[in-house]
Image (tube, rainbow, N blue to C red):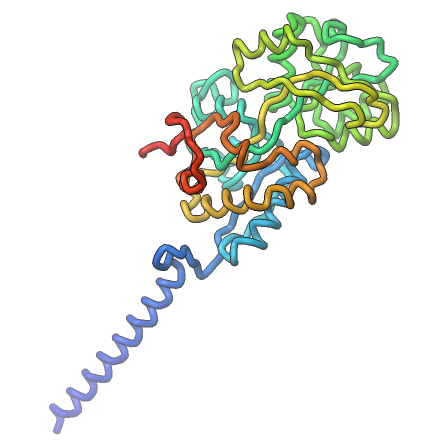
Length: 349
């Protein structure tokens, strides 16, 4: 009799163990990918670092985050944060773990990945970053008051020139352009953010300001609505000198009418903005991020309302690419039949 009771107890315990094991298995399966569908019990959090609220990075990042949430079928929970643009965003990703995606200039991303050129990265490569794709031209705009008497880039010699926050993408563009013009050591540099520049130009505390951003740029629009401004041309000879040292630059036109009272086209140069992610973002998430970005590019551009963002498309996704792709992005481009140069294919390790 006793033996029969023991057997019943053992059988009951065995059933309990089996039920618990099955329940645990179901729970664990819910948190992992299923059969290639990439289904997850909890959406993957994507934190996108952008730039100043008066630039283009911030509205683009906000809108893109909304589309990730809308079209990822619950797999992504994204939000965009105001950032300090290219250099700071990459540092925040790789060293401060403050996000897992960011907007950055292609030139700055190259310097970071290879540990070259600029002090923030020289000898300290940031190998944590991978590319999703290229977005739109970031136009270098040199803004002065209309009655400033500054008509050419060479007239900036001896003037107070806002060159962006020290170490920012704008700073390096300003420095490289002014070095190519032979006047970097002849200006009085002012290290100011976009927000500070508007008031300082109006009050004539500075004579000129560099902006690297998609056009039209909100803060320049604001300034143009309050006072008469003009843009200074970056001539052909400076563009050619830049290209010899920095192949990321392209020639760009700011069309007449971009800003109030801008009555003629202005020739300048640009770099390209990129969407980058940390290398440890799961492949299926990076794939979805790429797919949603380019399949909804025009809708995103319409919501952002910036001329420059209309450039975003699959046709330009690899134009100006400067660091290796994330495997998820690479998979998407392969499916679409795009030819990725060998140097931008995902690293094997």
